[in-house]
Length: 129
Image (tube, rainbow, N blue to C red; front, side, top):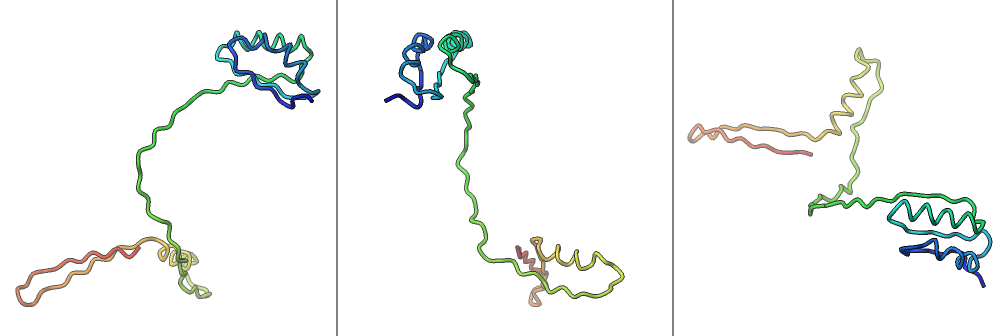
């Protein structure tokens, strides 16, 4: 039984290529992890000497991502209701489109009432989004 794939993570991977050539099946895959280009060059040279074909070299860089703790709102589960759109030949063809857009945008209303007993005004802001 021969291996379908061999992974080399060694300081001198080119020294393992002759052994890998005996242990791998035809058209098997071999991967070598090397931190230096010189190691890759020597390994590739050895792979070619042992008739390995379709050799690719890929550089992989470690890039850390730092994520702070973030609180997110749950997405809405209810469907938005569209206002009924009447089909008419209005003077402004964008009027229906604007009505639909306005209904989808979050809106804020401000109401001001006067307290009759002392004449003070009360402002109530209501977010209707």
